[in-house]
Length: 500
Image (cartoon, rainbow, N blue to C red; front, top):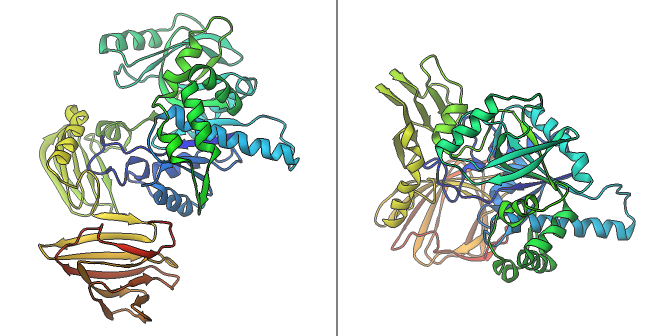
């Protein structure tokens, strides 16, 4: 069983904490581990194979760094463009079957079973790992026999936020799926929920409704077989894309032209609904999952899953701070803060999210409209929807502390052994002051060390690079000055990370 983790989203519903360049799957939400790291972690003891993580070019180094930090290896498959879940899973299925057939051809190992894909989202919260693993295990025998499996979430309330799965006849500990249903209106959702909470049969879930989790278990060869039958354009495009792959460091790149030509479709539309509509023996099965699941679709969902005080208040503090809030005469409110002290007085039912460069204050009933704020930021030419002040790079991170018309100040942290590319700038000069650690600096034809409390100057047009030769983090203050200070004023001559 091979995990396939979808980590390419760039959601806006958790703005300002989630940004295009740092979406929610990479957030820790008050815990040391990110949601991606937790997704991989809950597979411990369930699978032995390395996960395939599907992401995009922009987020590839975030995935690699979070896996490194978690002490986990992974195969990272890069989508050149987003084409929804059906093509993404097809890429993974082709990779797995190509590897399987190569091993079988070479007789390198004995593989008694065809490979099974366990398809997961990187940004789900599941509190009960044991229940999750038990539900996955219950699907495996039928999936190995060729069925298509999914996990259906036991609803906790009527909601219009999710699609639904209608549960059919029992099949060896799991259930057939009668149909997948789109997000209903609230009246229909109440009917579904009432039917579930008032069972009139001993099987409880039979003929009832579960939330569609978007988690699937499928034998790789069966997925490709049925995809070719029901969605041949997706099959052909993905086959062509995987016929011409290149490996770069931790990453596998597919053919850009072939994959760009692929239609956009979800696995639900492309395959699952069509399989359910066939006559004859059911092909899709579901295991009910009651494990404290949430897809973290809004700030109100964060409030629901976060521990609360006696007044129903939830607090998320960054950077290890335990007391960055003072809440007086406040009820049922979520406060998220990374650095500054946040105080409230005489309020209730609010969402307050404070970051270095943006503050959100919203009523809990309005949090679904955060996307409208993000759209307005885009329309007015702002950058707060895309980047945090903390900008992550494969070599480390920088924080734009201050800026003016012709200057910019950054705090730069370089990981041990990492190196910023050999580069030059047409419009800016740079002054580097080492705060901690040791910097190995290349400036023109000279290479030298700069120690703590020392500095160096890089003139406009000078070819230069910065490296951390030490085993501890390097921190410098960079003062830029010039007529243009944009991040695109970089000419790279040499780069360890494959960036142009």
